[in-house]
Image (cartoon, rainbow, N blue to C red; front, side):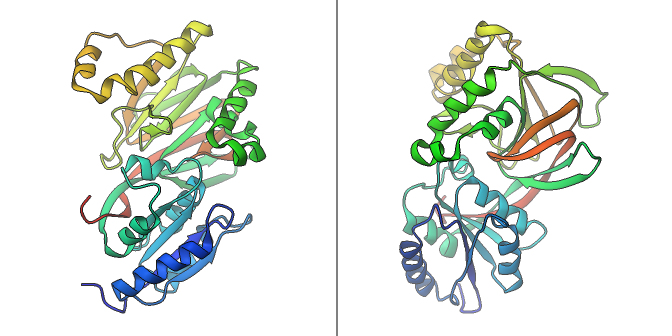
Length: 324
């Protein structure tokens, strides 16, 4: 049974949250749970959530509610890394990718807040990424959904923020078109789980802790948030036909056929396409032929000349509904 010695905190993005409505719901549920008064921390451009989360933990919060988009969730997860505090998701924004992959409610604030106070713990894997910059410096980050280098990172870098505010994920269509004009390909040497280094050319490489994207797109059909490994995919199309093959594989086969028993049987008769290369492992190390844009959970982080992604099994504990 919850006691009055427990305390939660909310780390919120003021642009994406109706703060008055959120405060009202949190006050009601914390009273029902008999917890201490919730702490509140607003994100800023200079610190989108990492520092606020660490401050909340330092003040005794055992559950940190992330109220914002995928960027806010990633920052809260990074602030929680190495602590015993739990992450609770209050979905907002255009993606909500971790909430989608955990099959959580996206549009019921009372239900989401209730899970923070009355739910149960679910350990999931945490992605760790170390990036080497062109000047030789190194930066470390965490991610909960996906890391990417190549076309998808260029797409995010090219996305018009004002357009995204107005039309959400449709803004990426414009960004994809602009990113494809250069027909840019990555060239790298990579290794999975200390295997011998190999060369690869691709438009984009995605390292996934989760597999589902908005729009019913199942990019990594075998990815699981708690299996202790990454699912990696390299997109290597050559011309229009290659892009059509990728579309059929991801949108039709993964997004439609895999969701039914009959569809999965039909998949047993299909062939893998060379335009998509799937891999699995707990570490993925790559050195690029030149500095390339990379992204984590849908946010750009500049350019890197090399990176190492690794899994921390059970490295993040998420609050989910008690009946989940």
